[in-house]
Length: 237
Ligand SMILES: C[S@@+](CC[C@H](N)C(=O)[O-])C[C@H]1O[C@@H](n2cnc3c(N)ncnc32)[C@H](O)[C@@H]1O
Image (cartoon, rainbow, N blue to C red):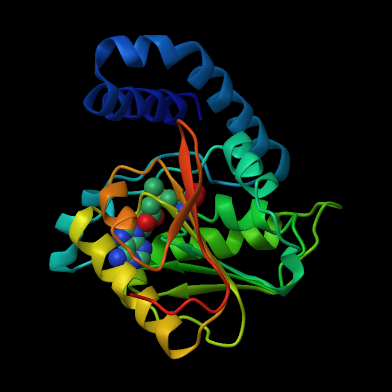
């Protein structure tokens, strides 16, 4: 367990240096370390495995698209809660979809909200199995949604459910080209069945892609994430 923690800390530091440089990484280090310890405690308390990283090269996915994708890293609990609190609508009508759901940390946290349904789409069968196991093990009184489905599929071509408003969650599963393909997919689905939709983009490395979508409007921008909304019934452009 200690060596897995060290591996996750080191891999996280390496990713952070690549993204923010040494100074940015050192500034964030105390906060990140505390948050990681909190997340390990969460796993330990419920007997889960959501925290250890899995690199893209370690995944059991044989696809040329892996060049355009990222490996597994779990969303931070406090940021996810903050994003949920920012949503200005009653959640019970919405289907929540996590594009690239990995080991299911976000799916677990989403069960605390009264969504109509939660769907996790993950192309790695191994990660998807871990997510299903985590969901079975996670017992909490805070649970408000019991309908959770894990789908092993390519999220960039996943056919969206047409009958409900959607919350589409992205924690950086793809690089630019796959994200563009996914947004085009979402746009076509909205054109065919206009409905309310939010895109929650955590660690928005390729926000130029989502900003270009005529059917989305930025609703909230913070240092960690962007929330976009398609006003109900607006046709995709
Ligand atoms: C940064 S992790 C996010 C995990 C999870 N959403 C969370 O919030 O904890 C990105 C995930 O996207 C998955 N992924 C990347 N490309 C994908 C694709 N085309 N289809 C499905 N999953 C994909 C990776 O395997 C990885 O598990």
